[in-house]
Image 1: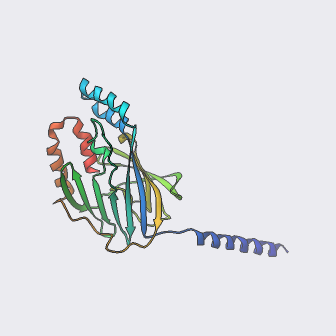
Image 2: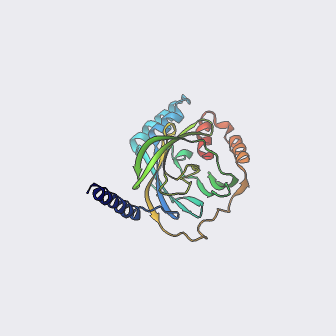
Image 3: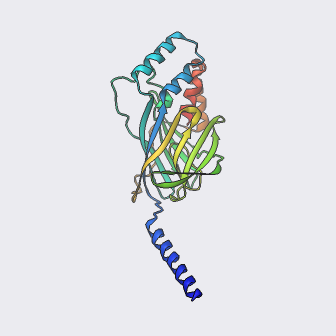
Length: 259
């Protein structure tokens, strides 16, 4: 009798597991929608802190009264066949973005194609009126995976931490239920898709709002081709030289352009 009970229990859990597994999808192709959120009040306050200029302080106070604290921007990540294409969506035009409307960190300047198998990245970068095409090896990020979990867009995600560009602290949340080692912007290298990224000290986050599991035509996953071609080192030298007269404010702009 006891053996029959054990057998029935095993059959029940086996059937339950099979049914559950049939309802869990592990997409290898599709489109992810992200929302980038920037705390503009905190970002601007930090950027003007060292300027010691009353004009900037007055402009900041006026900005806080006329503009929302948080700016949101939309983007998509198309993925399939171990390739990803991150594309910003056009920003809604408003009557005025205020005195600080051109903050590079509050824009979306990158269209990024990653060939994860080959370890190659092509980034089209908009730097004010100029367009650059930066081709180089995919950024290597040394992630430290933690036990913290959270749900994003219906997927269970695990937290990982890292430092990029020598000083930017990154918190990422990835899911192994999407077995593609990609993510928004230039973030990748985890054992699954990155659905959430926070840069706490840069006052910026990216979080997925929707994942669409669908076949992606091969002609969609292609690298951008327009822009002045250079590698990452050459681009950094160019931007650093262009910003050399900006003083301390150049540090924030350089981070945004190099991201």
